[in-house]
Picture 1 (cartoon, rainbow, N blue to C red):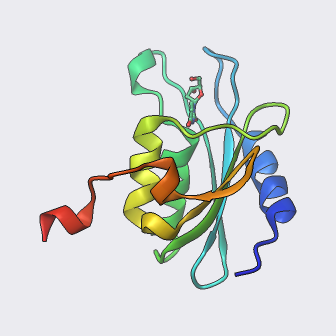
Picture 2 (picture 1 turned 180 degrees about the vertical axis):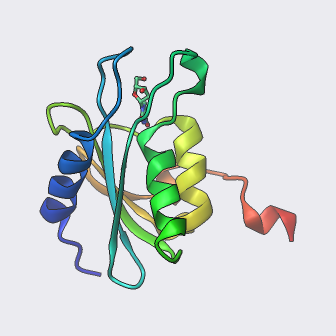
Length: 128
Ligand code: THU
């Protein structure tokens, strides 16, 4: 599939600008292409109780579900400079649930699928 990575990066950078990150001062934005062609996005939302912080990917998953669900096909995560950011471990699991092994994640070495980003994953298949 032909993914417009630049457009996705731009959407992730726009989402990053909505970040609520007064504690870390580390805004994060993420954007994804969904199987029906729409885009979803998210930003990190911190909390005075630091451990309750919601990563940008959590916000993106909420956007995905609230706007109709579907499968994630491609995702880009950026920092405050708009540079590519590696999704944290927990967020890889969140993304995996809704994209599976074929979800493409943009890295500095180009797009990599979730099978590479999260090898030998635990997921819905293990519960069936
Ligand atoms: N953060 C994300 O939003 N996503 C990630 O994948 C990595 C970390 C946020 C959480 C926190 O608000 C800030 O980055 C610093 O850890």
